[in-house]
Image 1 (cartoon, rainbow, N blue to C red):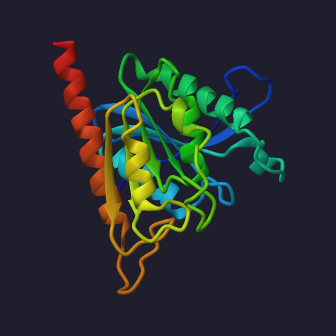
Image 2 (tube, rainbow, N blue to C red; image 1 turned 180 degrees about the horizontal axis):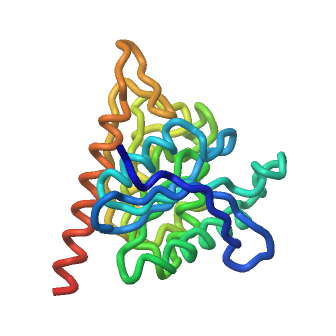
Length: 229
């Protein structure tokens, strides 16, 4: 049995007054790194994918913090430009940094949360970004260009995308990825939608999603250790 259960935590945004609510998962063994996991526009930190990512990360040796953007608690809406949510995510990174020492911290986001991660990627305490179902364009409208947060990606990024995602045409995505100034890895989950719901035969796509995330984090940590040496 896990003797280090998940606990609810409160922390302030990076620069605004108020409190952000989260759930912290600690690993049972040595801590390798930290990760903040954010949700999509119409969900919250109880979302099944968000929760499973945090739990799997803790099992893999990461301190994992899944968080609610404050509009969830307020029963409101996300800010139009996501600046408020960016500040809340940066607050989560600062909260983790307090007990992480110099270990790397990654930020991961599902759907809209991935856009917020892109905005916050310039934070000096962020080691890398994990985008789970990046909403590159409006639903079924790949002709809409210039995703607003894309130019703000300032750290290496892993993009995990379902091949049947109506919010992200893969041809468009591959083209946009070449415009990034940072290293990137794209992993496509076959026969999967925006939240990696399976299309066709029933299966648990999370295993494929987490395998991609776990491999990328381990490679990132290995690279960082080589740089330190």
